[in-house]
Image 1 (cartoon, helix red, strand yellow):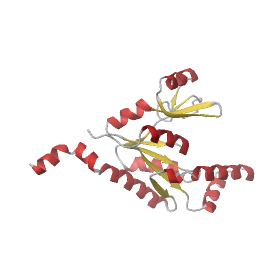
Image 2 (cartoon, one colour):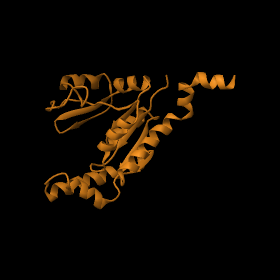
Image 3 (cartoon, helix red, strand yellow):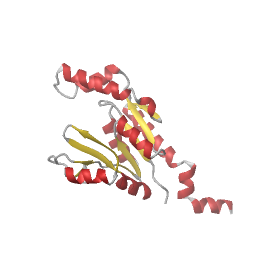
Image 4 (tube, helix red, strand yellow):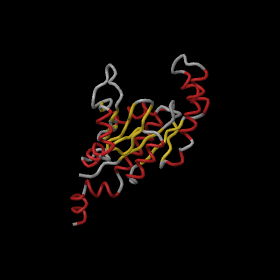
Length: 204
């Protein structure tokens, strides 16, 4: 069985990453989002193992001590992390895996898995990004301004990624993501692994 590919997808808040990734995994077989571990409390409607793997602080710290995370971060009072054994098991089973992480996490993962394919999703303009951030509710101007600063800070790392997708027209952006996944599946190494007997038979 051919090894799956790890896709790292990052974007500023408001670029539409979550919706694009959801549609991507619904439109293609054999690809799923990695489920992070977290120490935060389980919210109503959340399912353990689907939204997150919910663990205690002691369990999380034990995983850190065992070196089980590709990357982890403390956000306010809670820890979030990507389990290396869980991701590797999926990849070895031939699954493609998506990590939705920020640029710092992406940098840590790339150092450990240089074969990972990294994709950065950008908004079509600053005005449109601000409009999307403002349309999320009745937030004060100061809150929106802070989100814009955070978004610009995240976007400043776009040049660390292999591919850029500009989410202006959603259908086009989705097609571009699908093309990146499919083209990776058609790479020489993966087809040699998955269709070895066919290739041998064709040349016999």
